[in-house]
Image 1 (cartoon, one colour):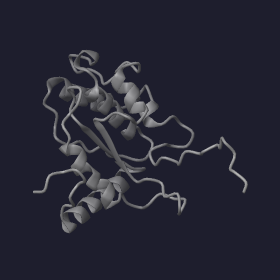
Image 2 (cartoon, rainbow, N blue to C red):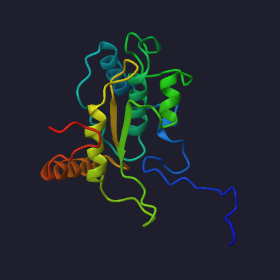
Image 3 (cartoon, rainbow, N blue to C red):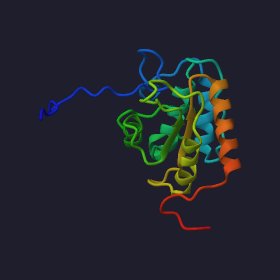
Image 4 (cartoon, rainbow, N blue to C red):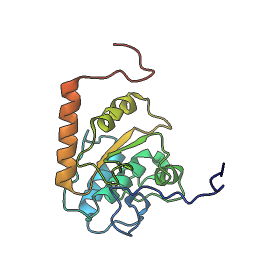
Amino acid sequence: MARAPASQDIEAPPEIDRLGEFPHPRDTATLYGHASAETELAAGIASGRMHHAWLLAGPSGIGKATLAYRAAINALAAPFERDPFGGTLAIDPATGAARQVRAQSHPGLLVVRRNYNLKDKRFPTQISVDEVRRLRAFLGHRAGEGACPETAANGPGSDEAAAGCRSACRRAAATGPRPVAGSPPR
């Protein structure tokens, strides 16, 4: 019986929040045209009194995901790594939080998005209920490293992403909670 070659080129599945050949928003160092939104988010993080939710809306490709990743990296960074006056979300890319977010391995960040279906070779039209249910387990965890947990719902366009989130949340609420593996019964 023949064996498969020892090393195969495994192609990574596409990500819904990557636009063409541009760098992924989590890898983008500079954000243009959103100074007021960035300042408002940075001020909220610096004050310790963030709003409980932010909706970033607009056409595809204007920087919503980049702004969301910058805010998440800033919120997850150690306090001494942030601008103490809340003027910017910029964080040194060499910090632990920035490296972990770029590597998609930070325990305090959950990105909810439409994942590529390898079988159908396409993205689903909505965020799945199971993807939204991951939030329950994630938000039940204690924050590590002194940072608050961050979530980001991401899609190609604001209307599509918002509609997908609303639809998935309605379905999750209608079907009731499911027990999460390892969680105590209620």
